[in-house]
Image (cartoon, rainbow, N blue to C red; front, side):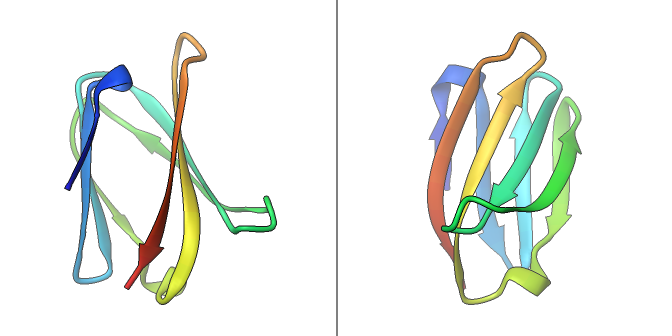
Length: 79
């Protein structure tokens, strides 16, 4: 579980799913380590579930962006 305070969101991974709880509407881009966008998702207020099965056993960068343009990124390993 990671709490990204700047954007008031919490996320965690479980069973090939990325669970995101956000207090605001966000966009989520998932990048590979070469900087290529491999997934784009809209995050609504509240609980969100994103399937990451196709990203298993990869290091990726989660990049969350608010409607105001604030960006917070985190490198993770998807088990």
